[in-house]
Image 1 (cartoon, helix red, strand yellow):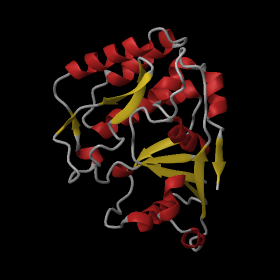
Image 2 (cartoon, one colour):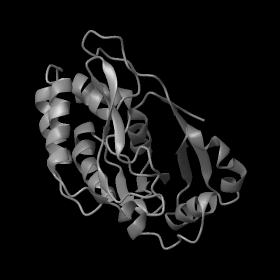
Image 3 (cartoon, one colour):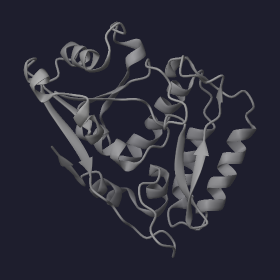
Image 4 (cartoon, one colour):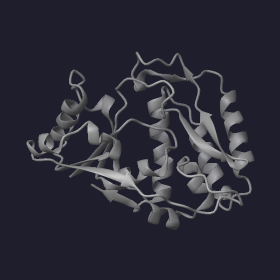
Length: 232
């Protein structure tokens, strides 16, 4: 069984979905410390030909709190503001009429915390992309928070009877193949290959949120993009 473990990110870039699509089970690592100015509640879209950072506002976010313990901001006006920005950015994109209603369902969803908010977004996105991977939040499944780093990852792999653990390429310096092999688990790293597509008439801006890919490409084309990676 192939397993991946990643912090939940809102509307992440396509590499996140490549990893999710590659495995049988995907653990949303939501009971670890929130990282300020990270990618849990932020990403980039295309606005007026340039990258534009958008943010889901949070209530009393802190690196001393777990992701699953951080609530969304109380004032709902941010949702209307974000949707208006997305409309301004993409209303002339070829798949806007199809994708914008899905985006509104994700952004307008009311959740107790940012982890649940992001998890809900995947219930909207994954069927559209044809991703059938099982998603599980670490906060409700694994009672091993006393373990840290690689040791906790290995413990989760053992609990799930995983035979193959796959991590983004950034984990090359964090995880050792021989340690996983000692637990009879194959360790691989996924490296995304660049994908390009027309973005209006401007110079292509790479590695934006999946939202950008959705607005400019039909699902069948995105499915081919999900396979553009190297496994090391």
